[in-house]
Length: 327
Length: 307
Image (cartoon, rainbow over all chains, first blue to last red; front, side, top):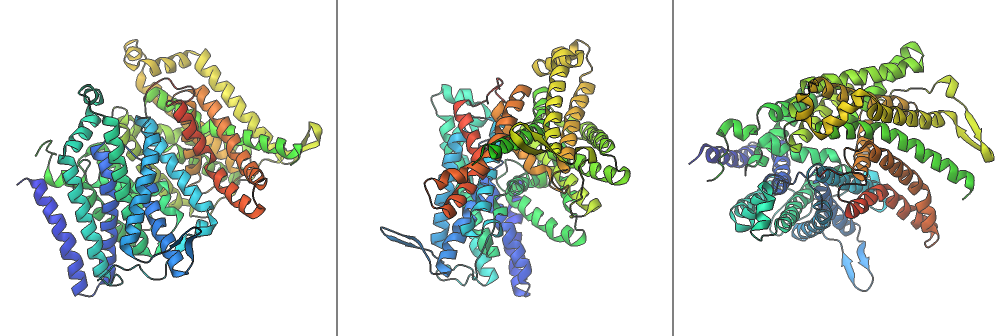
């Protein structure tokens, strides 16, 4: 049992114990904070598939986060106003059902990831970073100028969407849903990393030429990973919008892309639980430091600099020692 | 749609383009010579804008404000190069993105702390206040015309510096083979700091010049930064010529697209819908353009290196 395993277990235990304690002692705000952390973690788990495993430094993952958010916003907006989404040859109506919304969010962001990936993966290195960034801005400006769905003001949803058999208005129940999805995504990531596909991806990141020499298609593996990555981040976007009952173009902004990346770095690159540790730390800092000082972003920037320049392992690296290349 | 309007919009596009060039030139130079992707370039633009606004407010002189803006941005650039950026040359792009993103957080929040969230006002100089009458009776603001002139002058100056001076030879050599130039006895650390400060000064100049037609506020550098990235991706990263051509293409596309796309759609749609679709498309036009260029040439118009 490695130290990293203990840190991961402690993290999961904390994510179960703290909201439970908050629920029993009647502190719904703490549960909301935990939900926020779990959703951010989910978004970062998605990005980590592309960034950590595939080596694709995507600076545009806010696209998928925002698309997930708007999938929820648009479907729920039509449902709450009793406007059909499409009324032509057949009828499509909005919905307030989470499973349907999640499915749409996943499909829409996967499709966007496929298109963006097809174009962006023609390039590599610094071009890839800038292109993904530019695609992010494209969606951002499109959302701002798209007046039908609120434009710059965004869309508000009156009541949180429902999940069969649960009362999602109860903070702890909604938290449990998000936490379950995070666990599922972590399990999926772990499975992918150990699968033959994950090995190809890993190899394509390290020595692309060798992968091609043995007759495997590294680029295709990267594209598939990018699509899965986008889909997971899109799902997180739908949850985030449901948590706030609000979507706006800021979900598409490049600050959002940067923040999702920061979660991974704070926690530790190429660690399964890095994104979780990073998101928890970020939300904790946002809450504690943000209360003390309005300009806490200066401290966040400083911490980020220290981690990038001096300690690549992030929080998990600090607690668990060096990463093991094979386990 | 009159000729006058078209000429005016082309001039606006040119003006926007040359200002983008000032930003993109620094970015592409820093990438070409040091292999560094610098997100904090927009913060240096912001530093230029704020220093110009403060100095102009204190002294009333626009010239002094411009000089102070360039000096302050160059100093801020040299400072972050020596403390942070220098450690990033040998790391991968992910580290560079994160560290310079951290610098943005520090710069933006620090400026907000010092100046608050309200925009500062920087007025354009008296001498360049009015408008001039161009041939065919076109009225155009003198200050914007001066911006085009200033941008072109900087472009020529930069070309002379790179192509004709000893320093320029060292910069070009540094792009090609940094070990060799160090072995020949050139102090590569000083050269890097100088190149970074030069890029910073250009960003500061752009921030001050544009600050007089837009407002000076926290975050003013970010939209420009991202457009400058689009410019150098289109032009080819590392190429000054590419940055110039790319900047003009992006400036013209962005400005003309906003005016003409809605008009174009009015030919086939009802006006309200056409305005809507046209506005949405024009805000995305440059990114579509970039995608097209990259499908055609994955390393940009003038880019040779595979980054």
